[in-house]
Length: 329
Ligand code: TXA
Ligand code: MG
Image 1 (cartoon, rainbow, N blue to C red):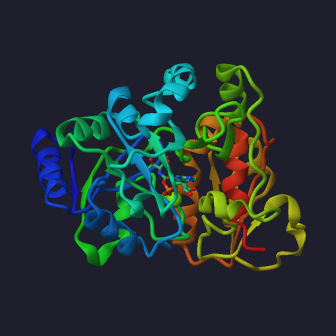
Image 2 (tube, protein in one colour):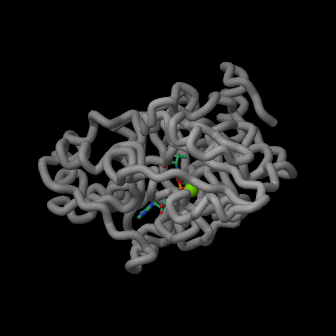
């Protein structure tokens, strides 16, 4: 059930969460499937709903820095405080830090790891809900495992039709790709486990060290470090290919969709269904509309979806990271 975010509906969501149930809430990145992070039986429901492998840890969302600190192992707080003070400028926002976990965080949240992923989301509905709850919310993206993350309430409802979930409608997610996951487990050598809404360049500048992006699972065993980096994590059901890898003149009478990053690129390829994400190729607009365009084209029963490419810099790194996982051939 999709509900407009009023004081009454957010209170109803809080009551369900306090009872150990699962609700869907909007964030600035994508919609999250939330449960009380401190209650094992509640978090277990998230894994069941998503059919998520128990080896993939979930991110814990909090309302403020004080709550964030409480979820870090007490012995590690002091060592991390300098780093966190440099990263504080990105919160609330699309940044998740992986840090040693406090004892209060159950195994199921972290997939048994000694670390936990924490973030303060930048969405008024998420923040109001978190403040009301007074406990942190474990929340992966509100999609079934291996499908595109939802950036609109309707996408969530379609994927979980039979589940009668309470879905707080926060409109279309502003950022449109998931948060950047940065590991601070070796504080002197932070590394990006998943590129996202905050760029490697921004993080390097804030921390005063070059922050590398861990190479993806296709080339290494990074899947063990952060299973969200596994190939084909974001795949639509329709065969999906990079435009650059295809000779469009050989497509014959196939019904083909295109996700173009600029108006000019869209105009170059008069295919059956063209979605232009930005008039000018602005990567913020591309990220904002990307999953919705893939989602929409995937509903049309096309023979193939072609996707545009961009330089892997800044937000372009996150965009290309997701698309490499969406291409099926
Ligand atoms: O933007 C986002 O991060 C969204 C919204 C809802 O906040 N959430 C999200 O969650 O994308 P999910 O579960 O789809 O992806 C979480 C990512 C995965 O790649 C997971 O492996 C990584 O974060 N992660 C979480 N905890 C971790 C940990 N302790 N160590 C390493 N990676 C971790
Ligand atoms: Mg996800």
